[in-house]
Image 1 (cartoon, rainbow, N blue to C red):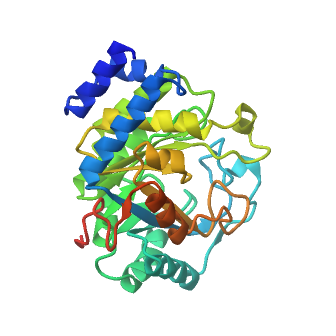
Image 2: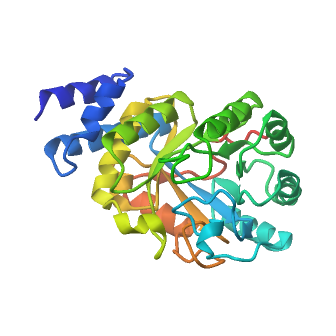
Length: 335
């Protein structure tokens, strides 16, 4: 056992904040080594302590399909890829029905996901219908384009408990989004009282230890209520697909490093897509999705992760699925 690695892991478990240099050291460990399994065990212990052994499943519904001007290289919605040449917002009644179905199945929070082609006023109008239909205690989470302080206040007023927003790996290079804009949006949301869910991703084999470390530190510094480590889901024909996929065993190692770096202040830690190795390594948050999705070429998500299936996976990994509203997004307290 490498004593340096063991010392860094012990420091994290004792509540110390590990440095960027220490994070780099952990990322550099072979993911099939004894040290990597030590890190995954420690990550699991940290998640169990912060979440009291509970796991959550959050449901997400896609609002629209069509060409998005942000042109993310890994996204099926990117206008330049031509996968969805025609813009179309789903009927509000269908969106509401999907949200209610996820809630009835046991989802602890509901996310509304829209491309950058949907204007915020239109998004808020849909959200109002969803908020009115859901149980009052069910947290509603926005996954939407960047916005300013006024937009953040409008989201809060519309009944959102939080946002899901990330500075993605390669932001500004493989996307048409300035990473500083992403950070400004997150800070505006937090100033308005919205809770933050975020992640390190989408991870591909081409990403370096330096890139992973920088994004991990930034994500931690934004002080989210939940974070995650998620691998890129490749779509045939898109530019980044040529790099291939990160193996789930390697992702369990990456997840463990990000979890240990995040500390005990973050209640929830997720991975996507749901997988048993991630759950054993400390992930206690999965997402079940319906409607359009940037990782699919269908207008309806077809990868099969229902709320029931995700809850079962948590149970198989020794987590107790939470019944009721998300603790991570306010524990049923309406904004």
